Image (tube, rainbow, N blue to C red; front, side, top):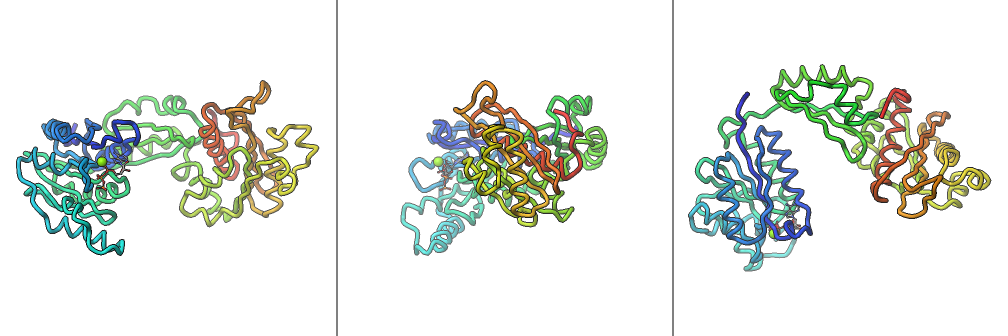
Length: 414
Ligand code: ATP
Ligand code: MG
């Protein structure tokens, strides 16, 4: 098997080791570098002490082809990355005109005139390092070489870091000898658990070339990811697709799949939400293109609103209970009637932490989907925090909607 160049990631910042900020930069960068063909073998969080930054950098460059750092490029005293890099390179810091242009351009864009003197230290670069442009903030990045290792220092602010890393990504093949960008293919699945997926694809999971991985999304779908050479990836995707055919989603995720399917059918959707308080709508609205299919949504939290706005009979609520298949069905049919949408989705349940009882415990959620006059309901029992129950219930409502409009209802198992 081909030897992949090694990459390491260092996240600098006291807020990270104190647990006040979650180090999302390293995870994001690990994904990016993996997609570019690196084997990432270390993600390390280091505080703002310069001696510790230096020690981590010295250790990381040994044997690696690329080290990427984030954070510590700001103008304040605790921003030590440039000093640590200069020390490990064993060169002085010098004023860099290109870095100063990045700082000045940002201040100009803000309409604030010339930057204050404290920002001048953001134009200090280790001699021999080159500037990585920042089009979103004042912190220019730095690219340098220590022995055989390229070192890229990026800002801590995630969206600035990501924009800079994406630009750096296009240059990596020229900077790192032997780097081969692998092919990456994905198959998105719903309606089955991870273990069922593993059973279905059997031995293909354990092969290394191409590599097959399963990840479960927080929003209730699975992703099979295949990484390797172009021909092997294409061949493996075809074999996998055959094994998991009944569960394959047409797009990445339940919301995106529902939108794609509705769009193909020229159909629309409306939503009536109780316990999910708008999350079904938010998950749908987060997908680009939602405006083609999403007609209207209503949060009908109070029983009186379910009656007044959706026509759910008070007698039905009293008889069946507000968390019931009957009320979910009446909510879906009510919003369908009111809006004329082809598909109507509804949720009613108990998100907790209080409010449950023996017959209807916390986590009980009834979902309904009314598709062109026909309604199906589904009971789901979720565990966890209020936030998790609401989020998962919303995703399951979208999943039910997708099963109904794609004619998959009944084809899936958990
Ligand atoms: P600047 O971009 O102003 O130069 P910087 O490079 O010094 O800043 P920091 O001051 O360390 O970056 O962090 C800026 C912001 O980015 C903070 O809100 C911090 O919480 C966030 N941040 C820093 N590192 C990370 C990380 N590894 N993951 C997620 N967020 C981070
Ligand atoms: Mg910092």
